[in-house]
Structure formats: C-alpha cells, structure tokens
Image 1 (tube, rainbow, N blue to C red):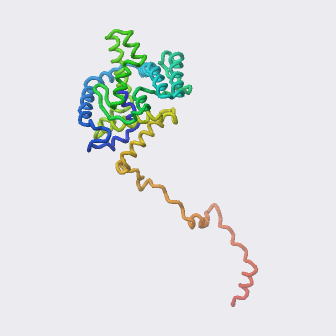
Image 2: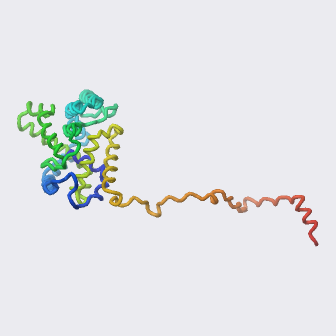
Image 3: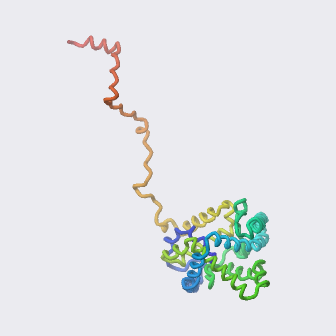
Length: 308
C-alpha cells in the first residue's frame, strides 16, 4: 500500500490514462489487471474498512506519531542500502535521522530530524539492484501488496531476511505477536493512503490500473535517481515525476493547456499607442478652464494686416 502514497502528486494523470494496447514494460498486463482487481476487491472488503475505523478511533497526532515510528525503524536498512549503493552522504544523513529521531524524537514518534536539516531519503533493495545495473524492470502487480516490478518484488522478498528490523521481529517475537505487528503496519499504511486522497483519484479515473502503473513507475524512477537531492521538501520529487509522466503521454492528451480567450493576456501596447499624448482634461465646475495664452507678436502683426 505504501507504493501508492505518491498518487495525489500525479492527479493529472487521471484524465490522461486510457485503455489500449499493452504498454511497453508491462508484458504481463493481462495477469496484472486480474491481480489488480483481486487486490482492489480485497481492499474494499477488508483493508479499507479496517483502516477507516482505525482513523476514526485513533487521534490524528497519535496515529501520525506511530507512522513516524514505523518509518524510523526502517532507517537502519536504508543506511545499509545507501552504503551498498556507494552513497556515503545519503548514508550519513540516514544515520543522523535515525539517531536524532530515536533519541530526541522519543523513539521516532516525532520527526525532529526533518526540522533540523536531515530530510528523509529512503533506500531499499530495489533501488540498490537498480544502481547495480537492473535499471529497467518489468511491471508486476503483487497479491496483497499492489504495484511493483520484478526487480522490486525480489527486493521486497529478500528484505524479509536481511532487514535488521524484520530480523529482530522474527527472532524476538513469536508467530502471533509478529503477525500482529505486520498487520498493524499494513493498516497504518492503508490509513495513510486514505489521508493522501489516492482513493478519490482511483475511484474517479477511467482506468485506475493505468493511473497506478504510470504513477508508480514514475515515482520509483525518481527514487532511483535521487531526485530529492535538489528539493528536500519532497515537492520537487513529485513535480518532476508529474512533468515526466505528462510529457510521456504527449501534449495532445493533457486536455489542453491553452488559456481561455477571456483569460488571455492583453497584448502590449503598440509604440504609437504608448507615445500618443493624453487627451486634455475637461474643465469641471470646481476647476475653471485655464486662461488662453497671450498672442505672440507675430500673431498680433498678422491680425493688424487683416482687412477690416
């Protein structure tokens, strides 16, 4: 479910996605659409109602604090992936976030690090595989998980055995407590998805599958290319993904960007208009007309020569 957080940032794609021939990079589209339908049905029957109830009973500050804690425990694995990708600067930033939020942020409940110059720069095994050479991968919809790729799916499965947080959960907790933690993470992710407005986007789209696919692939490419380096606020990353997606779809499918005639900018004044003298002011009762100027000597001479 976390894979869909970026959908509101690409909301313009809702009007651009259409059904048609198989998209390059999605050779398993038939299977993926069936899996997408299965995931959506399960979500509407179970996950969304549970997440909606969780949002109702849990105060928003507490809920967001718990989400921060879940993000915080993923930082050590992000740190490892940054090192595997030979990105020491990002690795130090990630470790700084983890130390600050774990201590000052009370176990990650508060995201203090972002406020003091340590932005979130997540790294995962899928990104690591991309840096190692698997830059392009086939789109794949996973059961119970949603949009992914073959590369990212392998990374997700492998992380279960190499992520320090998941290793601790597996070794220190018995089956049912560990399952409860996993279930809570899924509910939290689904609740955050509702907050993001992605449900409205998908429900109003003509082809929600195509919208989710385009948005996911653009978002993953942005993460792989570390586009957040130029904008730590997070908005630059989303804008770059949106612009790239719309450019890929073509200008004729964007619904038109020409401003209405009534809203068009007025043309600049021509030189003749800009240099023409202003009309003389009309006298008002409060302001008498100025006296006529005295005749010049030449005018007086001309008048004297006029025959009477």
